Length: 298
Image 1: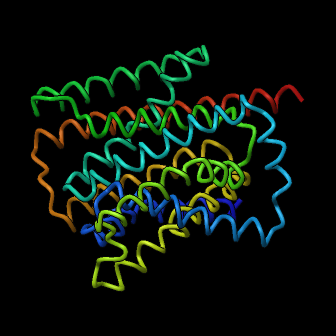
Image 2: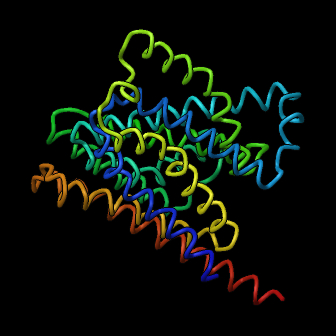
C-alpha cells in the first residue's frame, strides 16, 4: 500500500510542477512544444519498450481497425489537452488550468451519467450541482465562461473515458498514441525547419534544446508512476491524491507567477472546492458502507 501511494503521489507531484517546465521554455510556441513532446516521448517510450522487450502487442492492435480508431480519437484528445494546457501556462493562465483539473473529476461523473448510463447517488448530484454554481459564479463575475478550465476538464475527461475501455495498458496505450501522432509532429517540425522557424535549431540556448529533448521522459515518467501506483492502491485513495497536482499548480500561479486572484474569483474556487469535498467525502462514506456490508455478509 505505501509503495503504491508513493508512486501515485510522485506522479501527481511531477504533474504539479509542469507549469515551471513549460514556463522555462516559454520562448517556444505552444504548437512546437507539443510537436517536440510527441517526438521525444515516442523516442523515450520506444527505448522503454525495447528494454522490456514489450512489442508483442503492436501487430495484434494494428490488425483491429476499431481499436486503432479509438486510439486515434484518444490521441487527438490528448494532444488537444496538452496544447490547451501549454498555451494557458505560457500565457499567464496557470490558475485557470488548475481549475480545469479541479473540475475534471466532476466532469468524469457527468460523462459516466450521459455516456455510460451510470446512476448518480444523491451526494454526487449535490457535488455536481454545487460545482455548476461555482462555474456559474466565475462566469458571471468574469463576464465569460472559464473556457480554459472547461476545455481542459472536458478534453481530459473524454480522454479518460476512451482509455477506460481501451484495449491497452498505460505504457502500451501511450506508446501507440504517440506513434499515431508522430507523422503529424514530424511533418510540422519539418515545415518549421523548411521555413526557418524551428526554434530547436534557431535558438542560441542549449538549455532550451535540452529542455525540449527532456519532454519525452518528463511526459512518460509520471504516467508510468501513475500506472504503477494505480495498480497498488484503492481507487478512493487515488482519487484523493489527484488533487495534489492542481493544488500545486494553483500555488505556483499565485506565488511564483503572481497571477491575479480577486476575492470574487476566490469565492468561485471555494464553491468548487466545497463540491469536491462533498464528492470525496461521499465516495469514502459509500466505500466504507460497502466494505462493512461485504464483511458482515461473510
